[in-house]
Image 1 (spheres, rainbow, N blue to C red):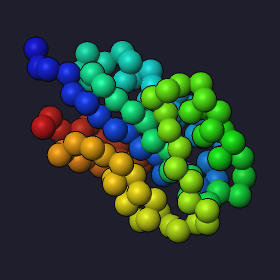
Image 2 (image 1 turned 45 degrees about the vertical axis):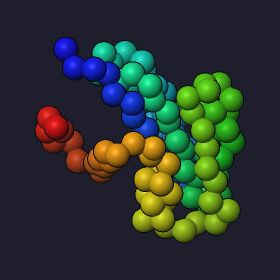
Image 3 (image 1 turned 180 degrees about the vertical axis):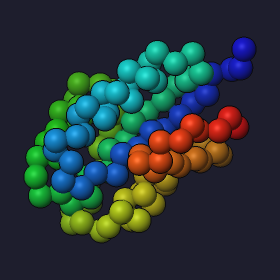
Length: 108
């Protein structure tokens, strides 16, 4: 069996009050249950949301020490939110997939 990996999962979020909690909770569940994931963190990048996204992100971080929040004071766009997320990854391997790309993830 392979050695468990360390991973950073990040969520760029702009006005995602209706989706953020369930997405983060699903990621937490998968990371906890996976025999392939050892240490992990989840980073929420609130990209200047005008709804309750920041409050929800802060609540999630308060409830779980593996979740942290970065807030852009104004919307900088998806590319900037991705860049901020990628800058948080402390490992040498970075891999990104778009959420709407539902094809099977290849083995690495």
